[in-house]
Image: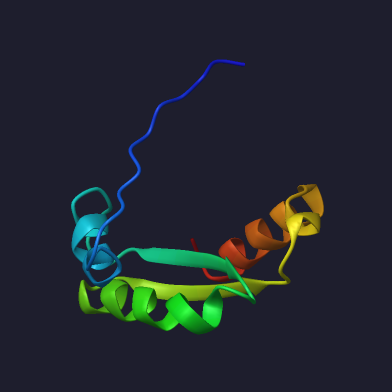
Length: 88
């Protein structure tokens, strides 16, 4: 396969500006699915979703079990199904 490049941003306050950042690349008011795991969700999920909602996005959430075992086709299908059910 061909390597792909993408930016990674690390810094204070970035999560609170997630909606603003997403608004620069996504259609205003579109639906988004935020996927995370059960270990991360209690710390960051609602904060991320609030930022996206404040920017006008319709936010759907998916919390997967923690661990490497969720990084497979079965969980990809689950996320795909959730996205489809949410009208994404």
